[in-house]
Length: 114
Length: 116
Image (cartoon, rainbow over all chains, first blue to last red; front, top):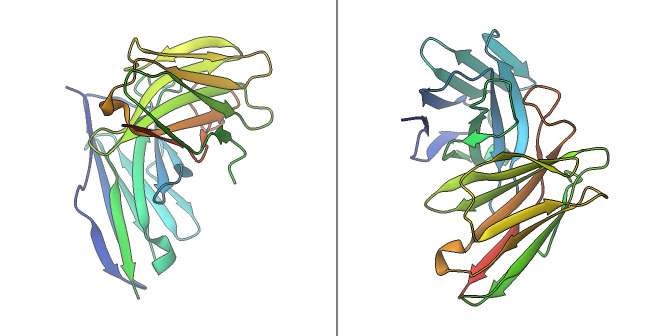
């Protein structure tokens, strides 16, 4: 069956360290993979999109990798800050470039402690 | 602020009732998407409209229906409500209908539905 899996347990890290979140998927061949941030009671906010032919994408303190062989994406936040505390969702389009119907993982809650 | 407006923010109703959730997309966006987020199911895609036409459907119940109007706003109608329909309902919008870097989805703040 098709699945997107993210670390279900919360990730607790110290301020200034690098947070690494994992997204694994099975039985999909997505053309794109996206990462969103969601704060409690708020809508998801788009962070980064990576294409299947891109190994890595960066935006300020954020870095995403995409390994289509391992069917895995890693999301890194360097020099983490308490303000980075949120739930991070990975999402993909199962139609591989067709209709923009996103399938989301359950999310990983990140808590950055001062 | 994403530019996507959802009303109402909160809705409390009883089982068996019918409610309408409203979404105004970002200026210039032609696609509207509806998602349901509950504690046990996560964020689930319901349905997509593009310029007034239905484009993609997810696991949307037959009791639920949606439409997109000529001014591009959209409404999600939920009827014969059950306790299990209690959830956050999000609307998102994008410029086009196809997946890709130019069609990022921008989400509204959501409507929290409580069915008692």
